Amino acid sequence: MRALQLLLKTSPAALLLILCLRLGTGAAQELPPNIISANLTIIPNGVPTNYLVTFSVTNHETPCVVIKTAIQATPNVVFPSGNFAYTSCLCSTRNFFWDIQTFENATIIGLAQVVSEENICPPDVALYPVTGDKVFVVDNVNVTP
Image (cartoon, rainbow, N blue to C red; front, side, top):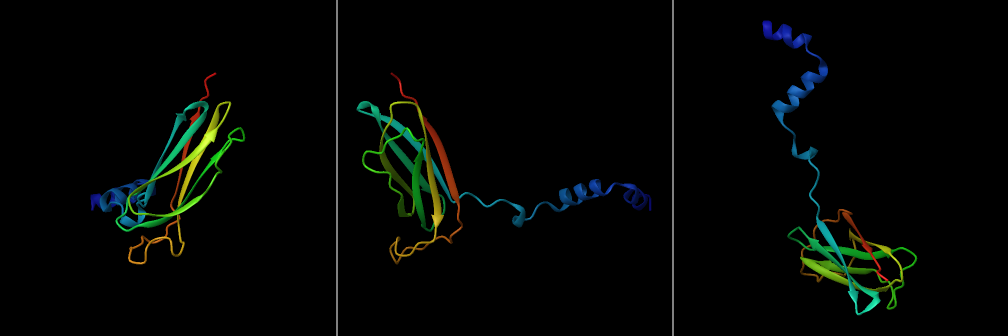
């Protein structure tokens, strides 16, 4: 009886906290894991104003995924070979490369997204359901005179 009286005098917020602690959180409340992750590396490429950008994307799920990758850069960056977006089948880790030129400090952003695209992966490869999972990686080019 005393416990019931105490329960009736307790604030609703405290009751909710006790209920959550007692029951725990369900799987539906947890955030889904990242399906892909990425790393961006920028290294000098011979000439002081030339750099090689390597964008590595990793799949963390057993089945493969179809991804689109691209990089964006501040306006002072030149892409002598072109700035291409790639669509590919990703089953483990894959590297994408761009050559860039810049005469001053710049910011590079690597972008990768899981997409629904036909005929990218071989027909016998199992695909993870499309989630729209995206990753953005930012790095800077520091030009030294």
